Image 1 (cartoon, one colour):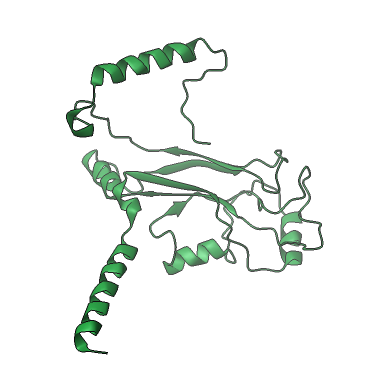
Image 2: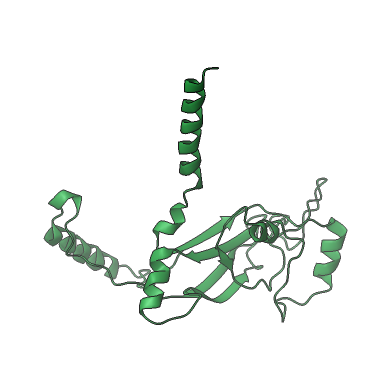
Length: 210
């Protein structure tokens, strides 16, 4: 292989590396990452089942989760760098026999785990806004972080969280779509939608993430 070809390969590899290491979550004020992240507990099933049976949930103190794969991976910096998580005081949310409160009784006998999680972080813009208004770190505060054991429609138990932060006021005077944005039409659309929702009995003015 010639030195010229080798140089081109190295140059291309360097560009690909730069693309791969860029963190798109830094482009936002705040990021909440939630879902079935599928991380497990590095323990035997019997150990986890026994521990759960001995506890009274919610726990009075947060569970340290020394054997949690997500906690370990985050501590190593290999995933979800700079993300935080609220204190876990609920029992493992996976895997249940659907329709019951019983952990997997099939022949697979899966180990109960905290697969369902909510992580959060502040991007550069969020931290800058926090500094301007004089608040300290963290700029997202987790007020509640719980599971809902009573919901039995899945083999997972859903989790929910309540968070407090400061949201920067929006600016609706900036030209959008290369100056083609018609603000009057946009505002009229919002008014009509609000009026239509106001006629519904199940309409709500509370914003929630589900």
